[in-house]
Image (cartoon, rainbow, N blue to C red; front, side):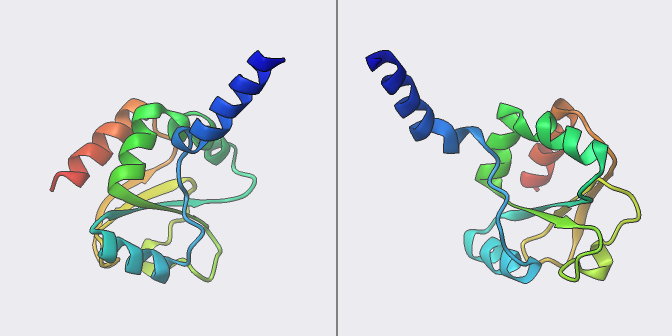
Length: 131
């Protein structure tokens, strides 16, 4: 019993470290936060029933190294393709589409169409965050 309580406590304490922090913000609020924290914006454009979006969230975005770089260097945001909050210049006909955007929310630094592996995404995120 004590062992189970200890394991549950460890899981509860360290669970936030094991997940990607998708901010529940509007795009405009994400820009404000990115400016304030001097971070880039990682925007995932998705659809609710997109199998590739689900796969990306279950695999690529659960990768430890991907989560670490996103949580430290980016404000991560997920917006549905038809959301009124999505800015026209970051609209995509395909999902998932990933954008890396400057902190001012004006310049697209990178655009990735479709599913991407954890290793490839990590490399793209690393390069973009070092510019």
